[in-house]
Image (cartoon, rainbow, N blue to C red; front, side, top):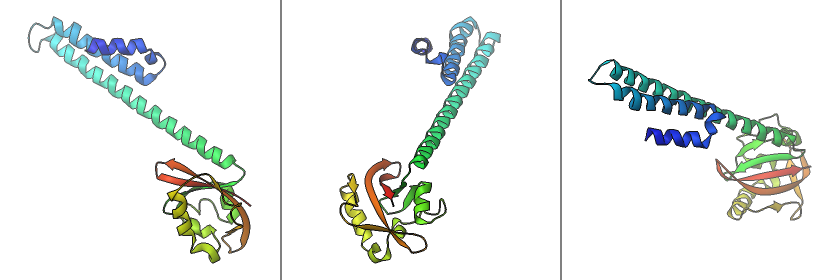
Length: 196
């Protein structure tokens, strides 16, 4: 079984370029040596070869632990880099972008959206999207949001009605809004692109 796993790893060749795979191959090599070479030379319980085989087995566990730890570190590094790259792309967009969950809570927003509405970054995160909507139409917005989530599609709001946003200081200003649904770890959300 150890030999089959070792041959499989060696044939795939990933161990030559991936440090975590390299450590796992080393673990299999040491385990194979322990069980097939050293243990076979043991003639009685607890002789030197028996003890050496068990020592090599512990070394193989250590190699496997290092390999798995290295793999986890590499994975977390890739996730962090992807998150940073996504955040950089959102910041590079010249229009305001916010992501809102089904409860109407803003879970993400770029610096442009904060500037457009007069908020310090990340002041909008965690607030209800209704803080960006003029008070005269705010009460009806939760029903419109629920309606959108029931049939979430790409939708340009400006063509349907004249829209206004409300800055933090209470000043209303005209906006163009495009909505699109996006699946995230938080479930179905809406990505809103806001141009003033």
